[in-house]
Image 1 (cartoon, rainbow, N blue to C red):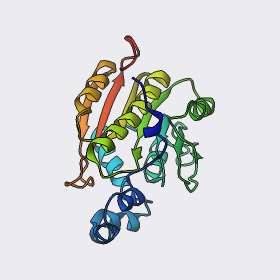
Image 2: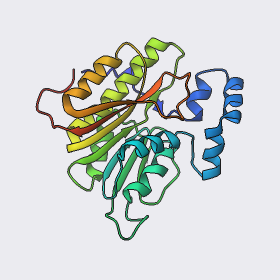
Image 3: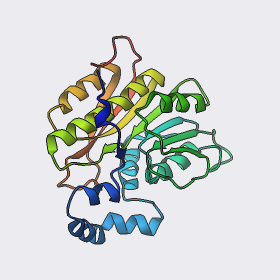
Image 4: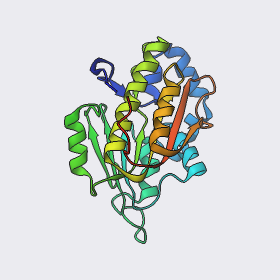
Length: 241
């Protein structure tokens, strides 16, 4: 599997800035103003409506637990981190009677601090130097969960956008396979397209079970979906191609 560098240079999460850039700004503002999950995010203090996507997945699969080491790729503006940090008790900041977890997040964009969370802002996860930096920060040799909400800056061309996002998903998967423990989990965003089935097949080679998840807060007219791969079997065969 070769990751084309040009397709990977710019990425961030699926929150407002990406949506605004990928379509009419007026339509986007209207949709944001009328979106109940946007209002709910504001009311509950989440940085973006994407928080509810992870909350939905967590409620169904209990992915995150106290004491885990979690790597988050594409973490800005930090809404997933807001959900994950208390669930894993990041840095021991959220519960004195539970194991301390560690959360390391990475994004090209700035991210406001959160208690117990280490953010690498202005950092391209697809660069080897950034991944080395993440590995050096890990409190144990292997991660329990790798999360990826990375997405490319959308061009409006469905085929190219799908291809770019798949490449980002593969970059996160490679890291998860190389630096996740046996039994670890992997969650990533993809957009529907031609390479979706091949990517799922690669996940099935290395994880006991793979779920395709469409959270309630993921807009029905969006090609967005999430792939949740549970219980890594270890690298017993060659890396995904």
